[in-house]
Image (cartoon, one colour):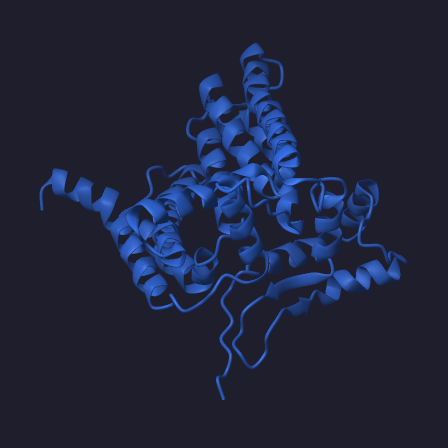
Length: 331
């Protein structure tokens, strides 16, 4: 096999495998309906094309990217005469392939200083993400989309040893989309700011170029925040007052993240509704500190993290696998 063929295999082989793998899995699960937050997200997106039939939901504390993406998939389904679920399976397959075969392995290689990612690394990434998280790509939730945006942001930030201001702006734009999809991704901002001060393998806080990169990273955050406000005003005018707001959402997510490991919406007809898995360590920490509210203030949250660093690391490592598919007996 010549060098050109090897290059094509490295570039497209893992991507094609990932796409076909997820497409077959999605096709075999066309019977799975959208439930819970996924159903609400899809319903809100549908109402964007039908202002005469407004629909507002508790899931709208999420930013507009989640709903616009779902609305575009619905429009594609209508034009292509496909069912909504099958159209989303096509999108989910592309999302999975882009994330597992390109973004994640390239990011790991860049952070490890071994860019570009190897073919073996890409195939391994595809198989691991598929094995552990394949169910995340079947539903119009914000989880997989948010991780994809964050991976794009980190890739742009770590593409070169000293990122350009253009790369910093691109990184900021992707990060803004990730934060709009899921507010608690705001915790990534300090790490990306540090990345802007990288220079020749170290940190340089005094250079003008570094501060220019910081400004280029931050500006898109404000631009997208303003766009989200415009979207909220438009929705209020066309569909009425929202059933939820951004106020307290971040503190609520962080607090409940210490209480709950994961939520399963669909485990079969024998158990309709939600199945909630508690987080025992986080729950114990909250109880020991007398915290009973679902909306803990951020200073209190950071104080707990400082006093229980190892526990918090364990909690969030378990959250990293919160999307792992759970298999239940059918008998």
